[in-house]
Length: 169
Image (cartoon, rainbow, N blue to C red; front, side):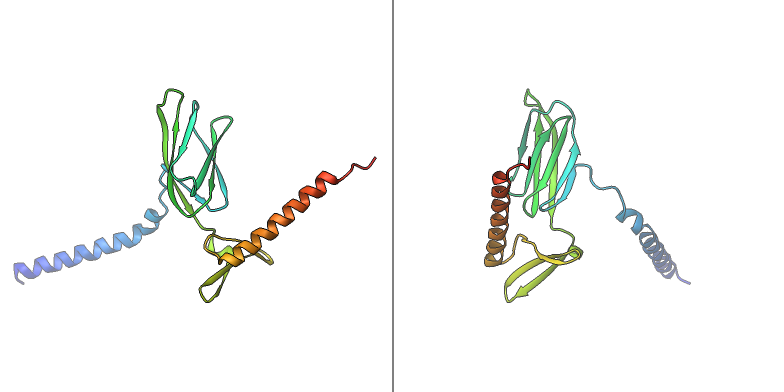
């Protein structure tokens, strides 16, 4: 056997071993801890994050994507408002940066929604356990507006009923 063919066989064995190692290690790599500098939140949901003490100011890169609100005890509430990525920076009273973190806002899990397409128009429904209208960014304008109008009407009627209600004595 020539030296060249021995090198080819050795390289082929090494390639097979590398491939086998990659296949075996893939689950461990895919289950690795999430990046601690990134906060993942779904649109229309909130997440509580513990922050260092002394935060005086919070700056959000794009408030159309996420909202960040400081609460007592060094806790911030991160609310997903639109799809995409942005960041927030927390400063102390002297302007020193305490935190600079990335926020990733994603849609709700697809197994919780049913999407109906009518040509290019889209409607979204939450079917847990019964299908109900659920507005989602990207839904058709008429569907979105009609659903928002209904929700607004319901909310104002509920507020009006509560304000006009008299206690039973």
